[in-house]
Length: 479
Image 1: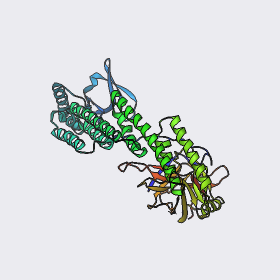
Image 2: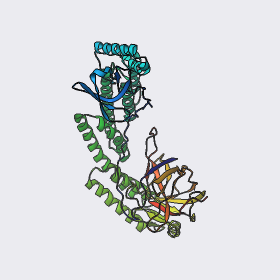
Image 3: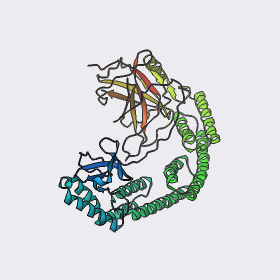
Image 4: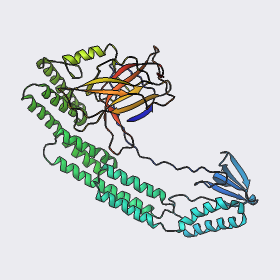
């Protein structure tokens, strides 16, 4: 189960189009902060030692005539002290900076001199001393670690995931390189890995494009390689990638339309409709590169739906192309008495299913366990190995809540699949309170979604594939 909180979630409209967006995953390092007492060293702080033996921690220091101006660590205020009142200033080591050997020795001598004079400052001075003495010691383990990262990349798939991991690992080693002894080596190795990643994956794209006519499915696979590759490639390589993808896109569009024409020659059936619809939706959403290509795919999609509606008398085709059998229409009409279909403009939507609650849950309470049977009617064939879930959204008085429950694997019966939501709201924060709409009513929303995040992603990411089902919610917890 994936749970997250965000801004207050409320449907913008029951029939508004959705915006789409690309979420780009971004990697960052966490700063490790030490809890410091008055005489505890914190990396980056300067220690002022007075002639009386007092230690003053400063965020920054500058000389100003006969005085030293500094930002006090504790108060954050700028203060001054006469230079004559200081016995010494101990500066911290800056990570990654390279120091001349004689400069390091001078810093060490200063700290040792101050330690001999001011016993009360032994602990903070010793911590600063250790920072500087670390620069005099070789770090052979870094060389070994850099080599290990390189070997792991070279022995692996050398794809986008492996490249990201290698970059993160090398950046972490650069952070650990206190004396800067491996800065050049790490930088050079990172650039070598980048060049290798770009070269290997351009060759992969060329190989995939050279296997004959590119199909829509193989183009999507190429697109997954080309997207992150362009982010890491230099301008000349990007131009080459763009040329490969442009030619492959034209092939894929033509190949997709030929497949639709070939299927049409086999005669009309529900299976024919779903297969053709899947192809045309793939062309429109994933392959088409411009307005003209999208318009052509959309035009064929509209014609396909009209043709299917005129020939498949047992089905009613909605505006979004959902083939509703008689019992599906009846279920949708019953559901309309207690549930509305809503659209969230702030959430991306890939509308591939109509979600229909098959029974009223009554007035749902946050503290009560309940079950609701659902039916999803699809306008295309779900992708192989696609993972589906039911996303639950609850507008909050202060902040909205959202979580997704994975559904067991299911297969289509005709164009539909039945499953059940079992919910107890156990993932809600203890202090969560639902938010009311303008009429003072509270709601919970159920949305069919599919998993789109990578297997190694730190957090699951889901994409809505249906509009939301609005269900009544009591204004508080049921206990």
